[in-house]
Length: 489
Image 1 (spheres, rainbow, N blue to C red):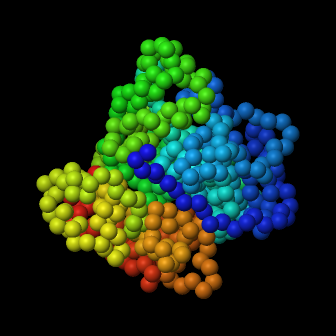
Image 2: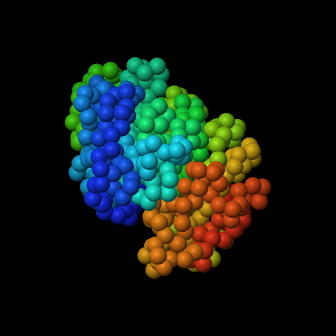
Image 3: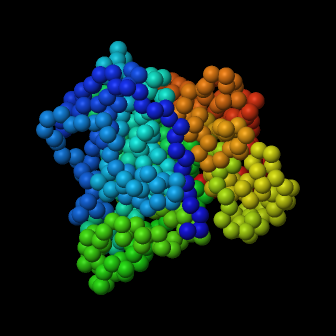
């Protein structure tokens, strides 16, 4: 692999001793959860039928009802994935039967319905899981927290000519369909957990943030969420979208290793559907994507014509995405650079290449790091985030942009995933303004539609909030002219 797109585990407290046994009644059947420290939690709730056998690479189907009381105290398996080291535990307990979600609520019968926050985990759209998120500090601040899972990698994003033929001319983006199915489940059933289906905030990290951005552009997701937060992830990660034909070519290449039939035929697809999941995962790791960095193979969005009828870039330029409030931000230092610095600068900045080289060659920046890391963050994260904020603002949308510049432990530089600590954990005793209390801001955004009086909207002056060691600081134009020269999401 050329580079591994990774996510960071959450720093969550050990679950406390169970206090009582909460029950929830759903049309599919009854659920038995567990209450700890005043928060009721329910795990392994099916929002779709298992996408296995002939259902592999099909749209998610409704879950089957059950009889009796379903135990919801143990997490479901993660979705099928290979191990990259950081995700060992998830890979060891992974399965294709993985379309489940988890819910944590501070009140099953509140006086007034509570705001709902739905989290999409990161992991390059090829790894990670949704387990454990519900043990964060967010539910204790008065929201219903939902964590969802979705098909990953080859199972979530494959196209094949025979798939397109059987599915009305489109294939791929099954992962996004899973997320839409989970949001539909939230709309239909979250009231039973004390949540308000009319006040849902969708948020995600890394690939999960990208998926939030793609759902902003997806017509089939319209109306299923009412606010959005993108943490270190953008709709296209600075990449051009992939066409259906390009993605079908990947599926045809994959089929050559599993079938003696013509690789683009229905017979080859049948052989793929009956192939062992582990073998497909291993083979998919060797696919050569249409972009330079193969670790981003499932992060280059596919315009399939069904879930994504048009490229996200076109949708946002036209002002046709979901018209809801959005927070979007990055860590000052995200992931490393693939390729040569000067070459990447000239390719990305075109006629402004030499001017950009003069900016980057000034040496390490105390906030953004050495030139290669600064450039990589600009190209895939910082400038695409600025682009999305600019486009949505131009069409009358409310956007709040941030840059995280601190980490815990404080003696370590900020990195991809640093924000998770501040989102999911309360500010510890003894920590001052240098601890960005992102969790409290996210909850306020979910409840009131604004993340704080000290945080200006992006507006016409490209305003943002920098979370520094000295506390939050308002800023403008995080990268000066550079992001203006990069006109891409």
